[in-house]
Image (cartoon, rainbow, N blue to C red; front, side, top):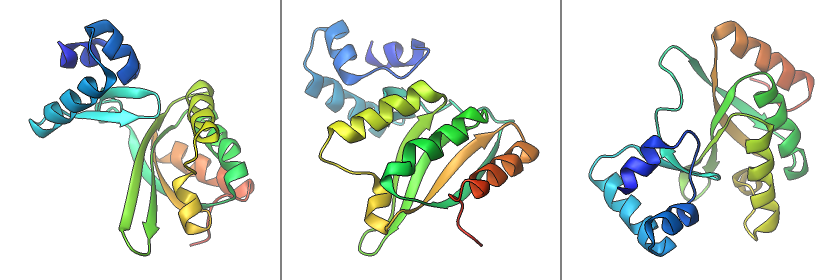
Length: 164
């Protein structure tokens, strides 16, 4: 039943919403999702909730962008990406001790960005990029290579793209 609810949802669905629907605690939902993942289900957790990993279509171009900015500029950077029509798939930082750390974002529009930023601002946990003086990578899903190149130029123009 849990997998079916996630599968049928048109957008990410939170553990709290799932727990209310199923009449169980949030912790039970989190544990059951972990079990489903261990069995091979491709469920991902985003800031907005759980969803199946097939949110990027096979014909989209996926690329990585090396960015650097302050935490206060994160919203502007993410708006530039989603306003272009691209999806912010994840954020990755290279940590001195732990190596590569990534977080699934799956941000498609300004509302997704607003929800993500609100969660960051209301928590005591900062952005992953704060661990690396603002340096981070984003995997983005674009319509094609030309779309990706346009996005790179927009981020570079805004001063967010790191030089190669």
